[in-house]
Length: 383
Image (cartoon, rainbow, N blue to C red; front, side, top):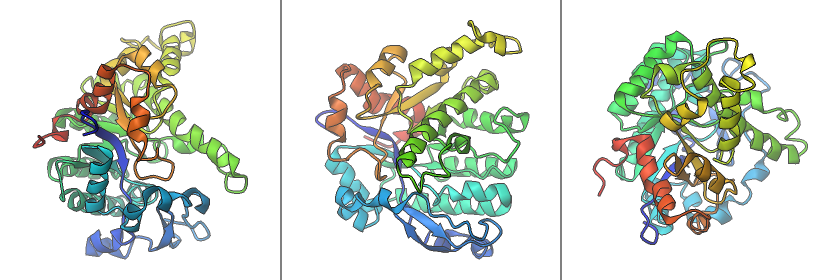
């Protein structure tokens, strides 16, 4: 709690240990995962195996300069590699009651990528990652919750692991699945998955991963000309989430599954007024000539109001305008802790409380709306 405000951090991150696959993979699959040979900041560096990672294409993530200020920013928490105990201590210090924790980069997320080339191995990696998450969060399962990463190389593997992660291990959401080339979220083969999420009452969290490769126009030069790394990152998350939301609407997924909830994370909330207005114009307004089919039963903005919640950074400049446009029931608070580009945890609450919105809105964004997004399992057993 922070000065009388209960706080849910709706989008924080794991920093997985280098031994993740070595210790948590099932024995029959352990030797099939590319070996982790080091770290670049918070991301695993894998040894190319010629199959899942082509030779000459080692995975190193961002330039090392991105991570230079992390120890100063996170101190002892980083030196302990964000153990569950030090994380809980940090949460107490900064006033965060509950964190929903997502994977990081080429670490836990690697399971989803591997599943596109080897569905069985990807599913085993997903199970290993979820087993580690369960063990991590079990130190205090009332305060630490995790988000699953699904293997979408095969629909049945994806369904089986989604059910296991939520029902048996306590995941409060799953990330939007990374689909094989040529597959789309609105294809009927994925309807069973959207129905499962509706039936089990867990949200799909969209976090800049489904189509993001389309929105990295400067990837080829960002490593050599640093300023383009910032531009590439600014484009990637927001544009991916915008496109993915549009896909759920124009593909009819939200119409067919009215109980499905989407959480749009880590892309700010300030773009919502522009994007919903533009999509409305393309669905039923002056630009709907491009629709090429029957109008949607609802406005695109109405689907958002009915089924979506978006996260906001504490210091983002457009938060007030998002609240003015969609109200204060559809926005959640996030810290992105402990990523290198996350808001400083020492000032994040002060920055949020300085936002020019009402105290009533702040209380909703800090607590109530996260429960709307993640459902009752987020606070089951909590005081």
